[in-house]
Image (cartoon, rainbow, N blue to C red; front, side, top):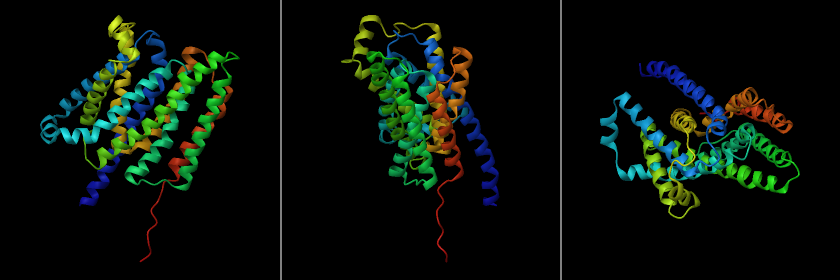
Amino acid sequence: MAASKARAARPSSERRVLFYSLLLALQYGAQPLISKRFVRQEVIVTSSVVACEAAKILCAFLLIAKEGSWKKIFKEWTLVGALTASGLPAAIYALQNSLLQISYRNLDSLTFSILNQTKLLFTAFFTYVLLRQKQSVQQIGALCLLIIAAVLLSVGEGTSKGSSKSNTDDTLFYGIIPVLVASVLSGLASSLCQWASQVKKHSSYLMTIEMSVVGCLCLLASTFKSPDGEMIRRHGFFYGWTPLTWVPVIANAVGGILVGLVTSYAGGVRKGFVIVSALLVTALLQFIFDGKPPSLYCLAALPLVVVSISIYQKYPYRIKKKEE
């Protein structure tokens, strides 16, 4: 009886994962273009990140209210449990989001998206360290293919900006390096979130609220001595904002909710491969709205990414059963 119930529940869970995954791929693929179009250069990075975290909190509260699980969640809530499950990932994600905001402005959308996929290698590494989730030989090879694609993109981006040294340096130090550091941080934070949802049995929506609150506090505390803080004190929190600036902020907030759901149901590494599929969305939208076809380096790297996805999904790690 229990086995039949488990089999019946499995298709429903898989459909849910597929639905969340499709939404996440659409959001993630469109995010770089939306940010480039609607966020002006003078917008203060900290203000956009804090606003995004606040929007995540509001979305999570609404979803918890819709589920009617307020009483159960907050009856079991403790400050120690919240800090254990969400405190460190929140601080990491806050720093990661700031680095991504800088990188958005200094890389074209498709290059940013492909470089950002290096987070998969770091997610797999930290997932093994924290959860002992092993990868098959084929999966390790697939992740290596992904890194080769990222290196190819890095070289191509550094040489395609022209002969100006300042342009190349800006691309490297304000585009490539921030997104790669953000990928390391993303892998660590994603593994910590998966650990919290699977081991600590923490609700995805509650984790979103906790992490966003901690992230906002960390960012606001950093403004006391940061250039962004000085800009906020001089020009105001919403300096450079227009009504359209809220479009990428809200879209990013919804993406944060979806990331939490996909991580809880499917795991950090699978979530990463879902995000890789957003490359197709990014490339299509960039061609439609910007009229910019992918560069030769992008065209060379994209098949490596696609092949790595196929290999990773086809050859999962299998535990060898001992013969009795």
